[in-house]
Length: 352
Image (cartoon, rainbow, N blue to C red; front, side, top):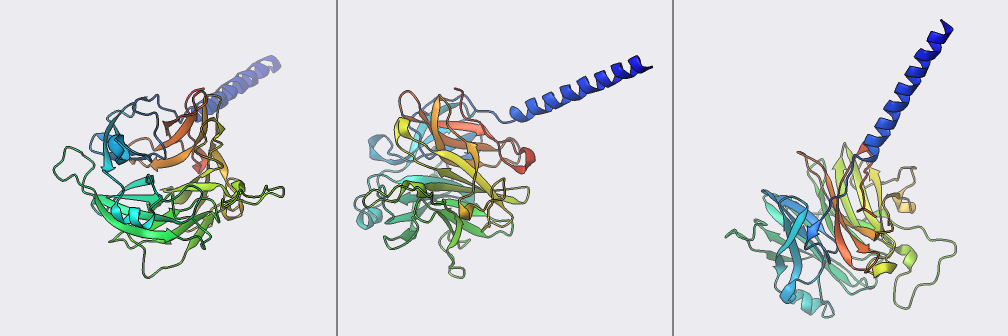
């Protein structure tokens, strides 16, 4: 009897161990990085949207011929091609308002009230004399007779006297149907303003500037370079999504745009309200420097950040971002599915 009992316990233990290993394996591989080809090198701050059978990615940077926001298209999420641009040139009012601006930054694409809205930023590197603007279109299909980007002008701006930077916009609609815009880079971190749901501009009834996330100052923080924010303030590129009654705030920490010296990483926190307070997995508020790692560098790809998310009710949720080739230092688009095990996002960087 004792020998039979031992065998039964042994079999039960082995079966349990197998189930545990299998469960770990499923969890570890529930998210996957896509193998991308085509016109993906050079993609920076990508923002993704799908219309019909085509995915569109908008990115920072000049298009061939000097246009702004080159667009990349795909019908399978693997093979991508350059398929157009948003503007032929920087809008005249931005040239007048910010004459030093040579390219537009950080496009954020959304579909709202039957139209596509593209929030974007203009600025000078390392300065907070910046602005966020809006363009709209009825379709993303370049072959459609209805295709035409309409510049709607300024949404908000920051001045040198402000403690925030009006770049890196992200639109989100909350569970109550209210529209919001998060934004920010360095200075006092990530901010938010309420929007007018009809116009996409700032709300006239709720004029509060909400604070969502900031970095904590290290004890041994180095002094800032002349006329530049200190590196320890580096948090930017906010993106907010709603999942299972939580709002998740994704941000990029540390330094972007430095080739092989880029130290970007993607962090996340969550909240029950779109305006916060957001906390990380340990419960530390993002307003006090909290944040949980989502994407960090590997030996092949450095500085993963500048992320955007596409929530897909009929399939896998997606996160698109850029990372720097460890050999060449050049940025390239990265794409991963999102696994929400434990009500926290999990994503994968490209293979090492």
